[in-house]
Image (cartoon, rainbow, N blue to C red; front, side, top):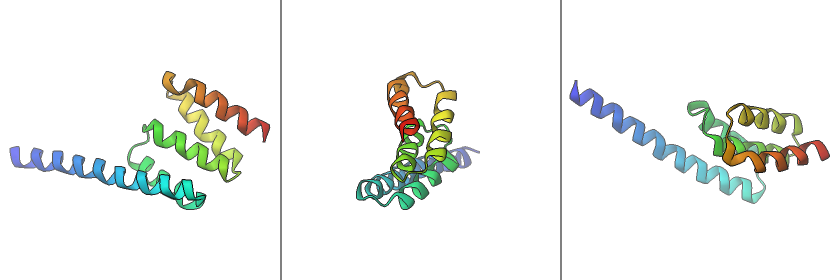
Length: 101
């Protein structure tokens, strides 16, 4: 039983490490203007961690940068539902950018 729980803990750490690698790759793609790749990678992380607000915010920005306003707005709505006070100002700016485009 102890070995099993240790293995599960190691799997969780490995998944978190893998998410960090994928996040860095997504950020690089986003910075290079490869929005489809960034969106694919951000989405991959969110499949396993739907509450990862920072990644969801970056996904919304990638959608905005690729002029996919409906998808950007969808991510903004999800973030608002998560009630992340630390992202409130950024969400307001992002929302304004979506509606102004």
